[in-house]
Image (cartoon, rainbow, N blue to C red; front, side, top):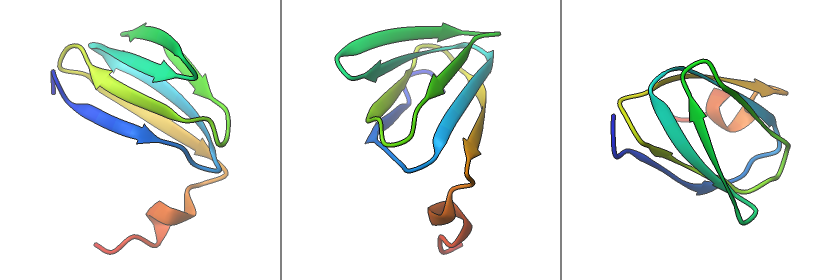
Amino acid sequence: QKGAVIPLQFHQSEQITYITKGSVKVLSQGKEFIVKAGGVLVIPPNVPHEFYALEDTIDIDFFAPEREDWLHAPK
């Protein structure tokens, strides 16, 4: 939802984020990226990043290799 924040994080997996609706601001390594619907952002492994939803947004995230921390997270 607009205004949502994904706090500063990093992980061992490469992340590919595809924004299908809306837009986000991504802060990483002192740079700011605005990614709008139809845009793709690639975040290398172990690179700190944070997301801010500028609009109601739908994104699809791909991780390679798969995120072990999510596979074994409590449900």
